[in-house]
Amino acid sequence: MNRDWIATARTLSEALPYLQRYAGAVVVVKFGGNAMGDEDAMAEFARDIVLMRQVGVNPVVVHGGGPMINDLLNKLGIKSEFVRGKRVTDKATVEVVEMVLSGLVNKRIVQAINDQGGRAVGISGKDDDLMVCEADDPELGFVGRPVEMNVQILRDLFGAGMIPVVAPVATGQNENETFNVNGDTAAGAIAGALKADRLLLLTDVSGVKDESGSVVTQLSPQEVRDLTEKGVIAGGMIPKTETALAALEDGVRAVVILDGRVPNACLLELFTDHGAGSIIRS
Ligand code: X2W
Image 1 (tube, helix red, strand yellow):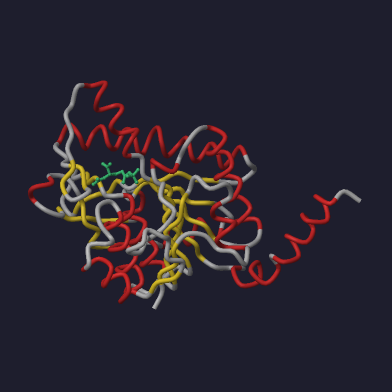
Image 2 (spheres, protein in one colour):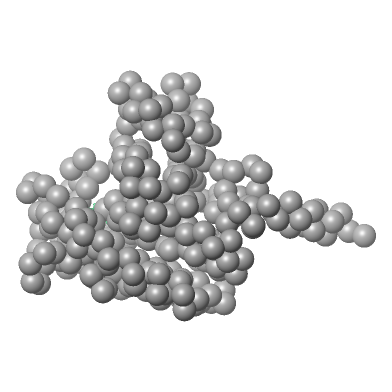
């Protein structure tokens, strides 16, 4: 018999304890704009999500789309800048953010999942008041910090066999307010409110690195704080590790920061002995 088939059957057999462990689990997957890649990579990501659902996991996809927002802002001639990893968002910008995230990016992911035989439903933080925000910092304009989460809509969608795909756009506490929420922040708040078993932050780096530049496969919250104090965790990694620590405090069991460009990154993490990226847990 062909060796490849024997290896495939063995891989499936070895996955059994993981499949049993994650049956019924809630897994929140943050899919960043930089991790999205081309159509093939999108189809592969979608396939992993559909497989998760097929084996009894309840996945929620929370997406970003920073590069896609930049593209449309450039075409419209609207200038944009980031302060501490967050986009300064005026009235014109928040309209573009909502169009791109709730429209283009959200529906692209929904379609990719449905093309693989899943039943994805695209929503934003506005739907059923899933995520209600207040202004994060006056300097940032319409950037939201989640203050109230209503995750029943996600549980209803799980119960109906659906896969929720959430754009990080939220409503405010006053009428007619729209907030732009950092995708990692939104994924952390949703994972926390659901007390998820796993929060997977898919990005374009291989994980949290130590002083020598090698990826640390397991870290405690204290180790994260120490590496941050030493300046080893810096730049774009800071919002991710901050999200991770906040989510753990809210009751998420573990957070994994991993490279979404690695083929089948989610499956590698959940269903193999190997794991992927850096896992942070108490
Ligand atoms: C982000 C929302 C999208 C996002 C933005 O405007 O770019 C803020 O910065 P990635 O692809 O995950 O970076 N919001 C407040 O987070 O996209």
